[in-house]
Image (cartoon, rainbow, N blue to C red):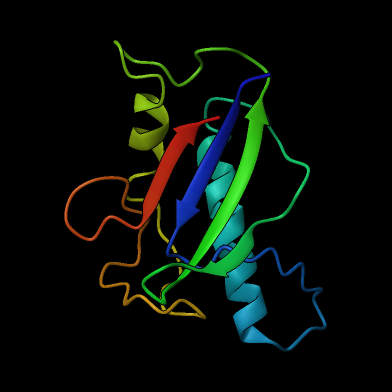
Length: 124
């Protein structure tokens, strides 16, 4: 099963709040994670063993890292780029910005390229 790693400055904490939970941040974090899963799920079934992990990078900024796998090789390949379709599918997916992230999110979407990029994908 091919594996991928995502790093993002968008808060994708898997908070798993229940309906009675009044913590709006937890609901928003979970919404961002759900949006990411749904974007990947446009082409593949997603599987993961560990939830996204928050860390502080060398610039003092919060970032989330997460690894997942899919059932088929080359499912996101276009031309010579093995992740082109995944980058395309996730680019512009709406998010709830400015939760516990420390980088200002100007456009409330995942950006996989260009100015303001906030999500990076690689094959592992």
